[in-house]
Image (spheres, helix red, strand yellow):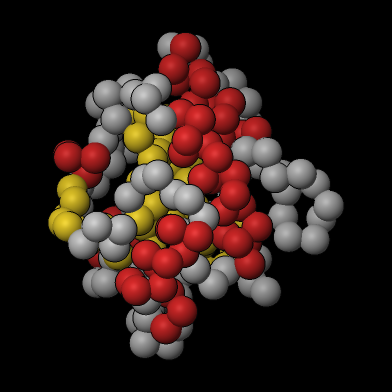
Length: 184
């Protein structure tokens, strides 16, 4: 199991736009159409990674908890599906259903979006404000598969709550750790 850290984009970076297929409803979705009024949480995930499997229940729970709070969640899978067929669109849709995701799960077939965001691993998290400027990038929390810490989303929840309350997030932003994105 690889332990690749996320790249820490500079805070204030503008979110690159995209147009991708949402596998949950087979429609094309853009960042402009999906962004939240107060904030947008963009997550690079996949189906097979043990680090993502470890956090799926927390991501689903947070998606439901923050739904209606003007924070929109967007999941994107950018893995090479030729060499990793379990990350293909059909299985992405099944994964979204099984995990009760209430947010779009987008397929980045060209891997351009992952490159635009400088995504390195799954999971990789980026929180943008209402102007689509980066206010948080890093880990969900300190839990990892096998370290016996509860997966509670503490770091990401703190960042979202700070954004919702208009407060500066003064906590150290730690890189996410996960499997590397499977590049073509």
